[in-house]
Length: 124
Image (cartoon, helix red, strand yellow):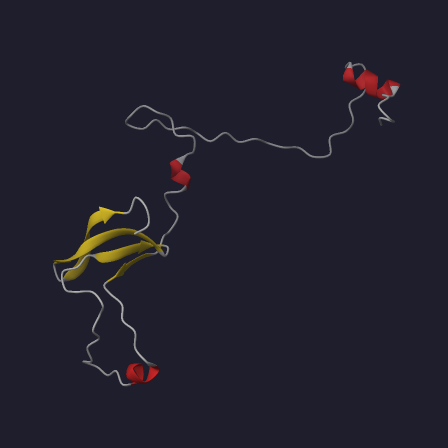
């Protein structure tokens, strides 16, 4: 090893390629991500296929309200909760608890859906 800036003869020989290289203790393997070309012709630096199968939780919030515990305990079948939003107001769409869009409720073949009307460029 170096002692106060001086190299040993063995270290000089290794640097010049004349001596034996020290045994490698770890080996590394680098993997290249494949690049894909999109419609504009630019290359993506990551393979988006790795991300496309990650599940996300999507929640559509119709509205909110606050009630006391005593009021919640009085709820029965047929009870009506008055929400803070008016009928026809946009609903909020959350992805993993982040507000990402607003939309309107639609009914398709007896199922509810949401038509996205606004995408959040910054949090609402």
